[in-house]
Amino acid sequence: NTLAGLTHAWRPNSFGGSGASYKNNGRIVRPKSFRAEKGQDGERQFKSGRYGKEVLIRVPPGTVVQEEVENQEEDDEHVSVTYFDIGTLTLDSPQLIVARGGEGGEGSAVTGKAGGRGVKRPRLSPVGGERKKLKLTLKIVADVALVGVPNAGKSTFLASVTRAKPKIANYPFTTVIPNLGVWIPPENDLKGSGGEVDKKLISGAGSTGLVLCDVPGLVAGAAKGVGLGHAFLRHVERCHVILHLVDATSIDPIEDFKMLNREIVKYGTGQLASMPQVVVVNKIDAFDRAGEDWEKGLKTKYTKEDLQAKLQEAMPHARLMWMSAKEKDGVDDLMTRMLAFVRKVKGNNA
Image (cartoon, rainbow, N blue to C red; front, side, top):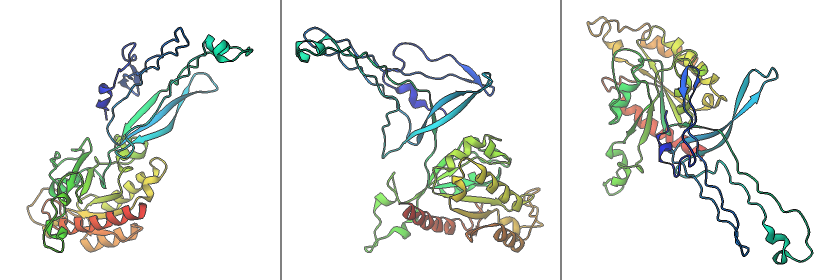
């Protein structure tokens, strides 16, 4: 995702334009350069020079900052790149120093009368500031990540429980960018002893609801970047719970479930593998409407009992639920349980 906030920096590249573009894996990349102001020279009568002005770069919360270091290979032909984490910008930590300025040199005053009689030594020369090549990655922060194979019904589910309006169609890869939505619990669940609901609990950023992130469909090889897997899986890292949607009408829902979990384990440092999951089987209305002229090609390979038995055999936990996002069957019960589970996970991680 493009970090549009970079265009709103103070004194962007004070002494020139953006760097020249180059091709990286077939796409054109145009890096932006930012340079702080130089400090001023010292003046007569022992006056020190003025400090140079800093440069502030505005980026959205959730931006991960990494330093890019190039390593020359032994054959002197190939250059490998290593990334070192510098920090993450959040609402709690909104500022991060990524490059520090240099130190000014010593003037003649340090060896003169003001510096003490009889002191004879070379004056220190100025030290330049740091120069770094940075990689900025925006990771969306949410409570629940909706994960599944293409056309599993993630966008339909997001639209049914939130006010988000993702693109929905009956073909795979409809979602090409992550979508966010906020689920607000029913007022009956938030009534106090007086029978009234505090409006702060059901509206605004401080509400008690859940932020859902609809991650585009993942395919085999996503951990290695197939199907823009890296661009999608990185958003899952910033969530608390994974809601794994299984398509009951898939050709092989069990293999889909196992494949996606394999990609989660392979991605990055393996952090996603330890993230708590809730598995929900979507499109359960297909079980009841089998044999009807409902939607062409929408059939189930397994009965509900067989699918439940095979999923429980493949799952390392017992968090399995059923729903129909289109008909909103079982959705309210799922979200109520998700709210309690997310609160429990947050409490354990606090």
